[in-house]
Amino acid sequence: MKKSVMLFAATFAAALSFVSCVNSKYANDTHLAIEDGKTVVERYGQLQVIGTDLCDQNGNPVQLRGMSSHGLHWYGKYANKDVITWLRDDWNCQIWRAALYTGGQGGYVSNPALKERVTDSVEACIENGMYVLVDWHVLEEHDPLLYKKYAVEFFDEMSKKYGDKPNVIYEICNEPNGEKVTWSDNIKPYAEEIIEVIRKNDPDNIIIVGTPVWSSQVMAPSSDPLKNGKNVMYTCHFYAGSHKAEARKNVANALKAGTPIFVTEWGTTQASGDGGVYEKETLKWMEFLKAHNISWANWSVNNKGEDSGILAFNADREAKGNWKDKDLSKDGKFLRRILRNELDMKSWKQEQKNK
Image 1 (tube, rainbow, N blue to C red):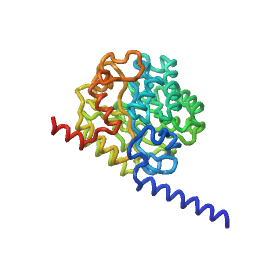
Image 2: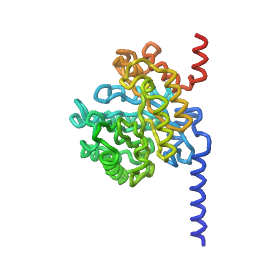
Image 3: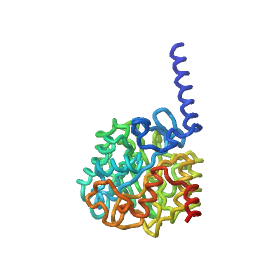
């Protein structure tokens, strides 16, 4: 009798948790990196996926927001404690993404020492009480199966080392692409094997899987789901100058189909990384992502002079953070205001009227 009562109580609590996550207000209405002296990880703890929502340890929906590095083999100097701390304290970032390119010239497969940039990022985020996306940045190689052997070794090591830390989120497949790379034949079998590797060491932390066509076909997993989808999400990437209402419709349809989405990369520009800053289109996306409780990381922290980089050309060459207004690009100034909760569509429209 006692066991049945306990079972009922546990089932009832789980049901309440699900309802809480689906129907309650955000646990993070103000999107603060530090609140009442507590970091975001101290407040949210062990993340979990309930329905299509990313939730905190108590089952409340949360929306994480922050910045992505550029490729660690090019601009890895910014993946350090000084910069990450500055992004938390001045930019109000709750999450940092360490973009480890795997293929191409200088990527991890040919330069395994890059792993140190990832561990530097993870250690800095743990110390700062931030979440961190460990990004296996599939891009030039198209097919995640190509370097699966390296991915198995990498994620086995990362999950053994950091599997007990609630800070870590594993992004196992950035942007699979190419006509021959499909969900069922390439991405799904890769993901299932890597998820199994991670889960042997880390049963709880969030895992994010890429989707076909540079992580744009977010409906694909709904018709052919993974065997083990617990605490698994899927990514959609967009660039506000290239991906507009139709892309948002695709994401909304994926959510209706039960696919949890986490936008691990997006930009204010065209998909090329240039073409100017599309402020109005970006703010439409910000409204959409907040309304649907979708977390995000913006591309990216670099000073190469591209429109999607937050630093002005050649600014902060020593990668120390502590940026002044003159150090920021147009994109950087715009993004900083969004992250600091100083700008939304309503206030932006008023500013345009006042010009």
